[in-house]
Length: 224
Image (cartoon, rainbow, N blue to C red; front, side, top):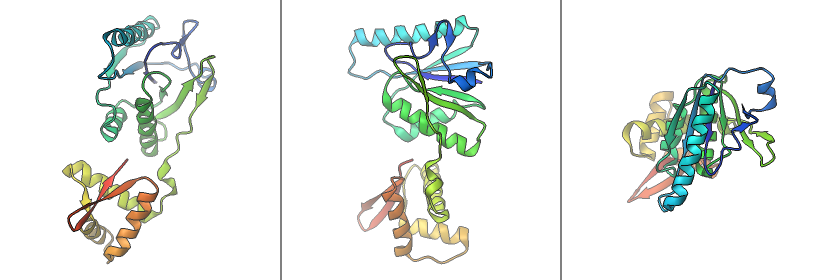
């Protein structure tokens, strides 16, 4: 099992009475934590004093894991607002039975970890054991790791996957004509551009993509 945690100004959300903080249902199973990953991110405009404070807490987290005999790796999250890039990076940190504590540090990193967990769990339900938040009083709140794509129609999901794959492979968004041609090739069917455009608009309303006009062409930019 792997313990992934975000760290900011304190480590109270990680350790309690010399033990790791975990959801009660997981603690009852007496889990064996085989590795830990500490994530932190510091704003570019942070003062040197604040930066040293965060780094000191990171060292505290490292020492805490080591004292429990848990190997630990530390990763500074740079450019956290590159949402898609960070999600792909965090997906690679997740191994079977990973628990993710998103309490500390910058919120954007926690959001990215949660979404990475959703995507990984969709492909491997056994990968994510829990994603949780620790309250000021030490209570644990678990987040439902539910795939937001579950409310998409089969064609909407297919379109989303096509534009995601195209962006990963070419580093540029797909235009509507390219999308139409790709769908026709895959499905051995014929579609009109207005039909494809309407389905892209549905995805746009649901927050998965956005349309960009460049000259006379419309491009589909995946947001997830």
